[in-house]
Length: 292
Image 1 (cartoon, rainbow, N blue to C red):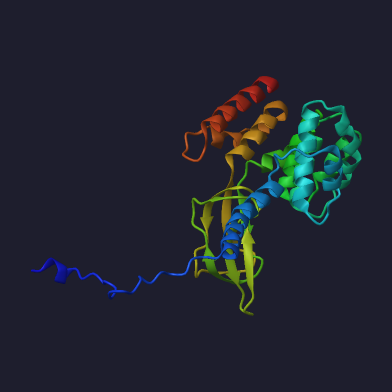
Image 2 (cartoon, helix red, strand yellow):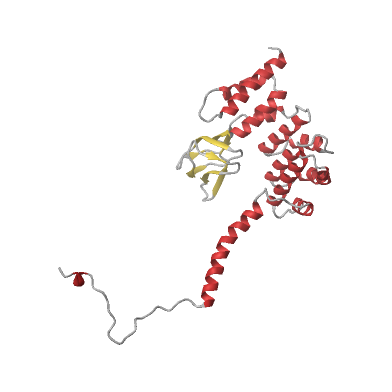
């Protein structure tokens, strides 16, 4: 076979210059690089504005604590006020009145973070009384964080709420309907994470979300019909949540609490070694305290 015929090469006719593709103009190049730069910049700006680790000035902290339009700004400021309190920064006291006010904020995540921050300083004016009120918060996580913070005040009033942190969350269907989409058992889920969608007979759809962080133990599968008030899913609490509850019960736990503690002493795949060790130490502390 003739190699040239097998791989033809286009040769311009004699006297004609090869056709060249038009290049990008200077303006087009600038627009191209500007667009590429913005594509890289926008994720950075989003991260920069939402990253809680970015240090805020005193003025920014005050502004963020009052930014009702951006709850994440309030959360970011709360976290940094909490860090200042743990460093014994006396300047942090200027924001204490705002911490007390934020206990009634309509956003659950703000109240949850606020309950944790107030627990960093048992001497904070108004903190103790405010945390006691938060034990009746509609959110289980806020009630739990308030109870954990009260332990730092030497107050065991939140013991029932702390025990509740060890229990799985049982989620019921708000209305009768059928599952059009659901997650799978064993899936890790964050607080407020979507676990299923429930369709009603009227054609409406409700999103079912987890009230706690953890792992899905059981859930009604896609296509299942479910009655109003029936159990739709069970969520096991996250290891971090359990560990914090066990640490608190180490200090205030009673013999009646042992049945809730002992399941976490077992060698189970979803129970971390830290949680298992803390559960055993908590039982020992309770027995020693009660003389049993």
